[in-house]
Image 1: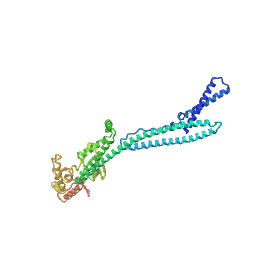
Image 2: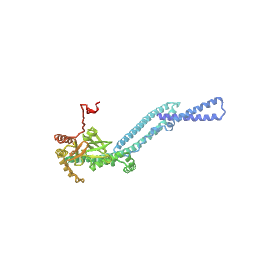
Image 3: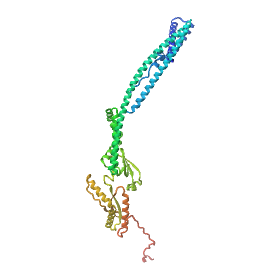
Image 4: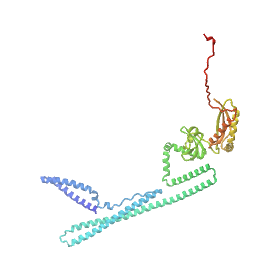
Length: 479
């Protein structure tokens, strides 16, 4: 009703503006008196005011029911290509239904307004019949025109709402079909993923039952989990990627930049492949790695896609160099290409050579000292010697081994302050300090019990003279 009132106001202003323009033209052509000149100036000012008012009412004046009759625009139907698109489709349906409900509500308001206008027109007609002076005839005619315009607008809204509703039903039908398709595909993918999880879970149970070695079980469990996750990722990737060829093309152009920007990541992933499939390092192995000039010795707790995790134990390195232990060390996998990594427990070999050096004096019986060191070393390392002999026999099928002597080895070297007896023996790779401590104390005790063996160490002799020496008496010096 407000739009129609604005429209009628706009028409009245236009009529007034036309009459003012005609009057201005008339006054401009003739010779004007002072009163007519004042009238002309007033009309020009009024013309400007009316022109500005028409400009403000331009939209409403051109079509009184344009906003009322125009339905909201239907958005383009989205293509639902993944499960997340389901929410977009449902949101669009809800929004469009809200627009339709609003349009139908406006049509109902217009229908109620027309009923009121009909009642008002009936009242004017009744008054016109008893009005002898026709005072309400003009008002009745205006109401009749107004009623016809509103009836036309109602008919237009009725047709428009029906067409809009049919189009909305088509859009909703297409969206529901896409949603059903996505739900069906999601159920199928869910079943496949569930079957994969069950299969790999059974694989883990089988591995746990038949693999007793903890390290092999850990690696097998790790490989099964990685394979499971990779297959799930591939299934989801190829089901929901919209344009695989386009993605491959983009990755082809971007591969060089990605390789440079993420070089360490790619090298770590490649290092992980080398570690896992090459078999050079396993979980549980004791390794030594040099990082930023510092040596770290620890046990491998985990081998992830980008790094190895070590637990730093108390070793000879931590005692003599670092003076600390118990830290968790993270080693990037790309270190297998760029740094020296020593494995103390590779494959089946779980023992290493360790040595104890003790120096005896030059006048000691060094042959006897070497014999005692050999007896003690052989006594305490016999178990590890037998284990190593069996382990080396297993390694012959993988590597070329020439020197397989596993008996303790005793060497003697000349030092500055005596003869150094160097005893080398096999010990547990994870407990070198324990056996080193035992053998060291046993050798020292054995040497101390021998009279002809003296342990050499830096010493100093201090000579103190208690009496002052006098020069000998010379009789020739007596005067």
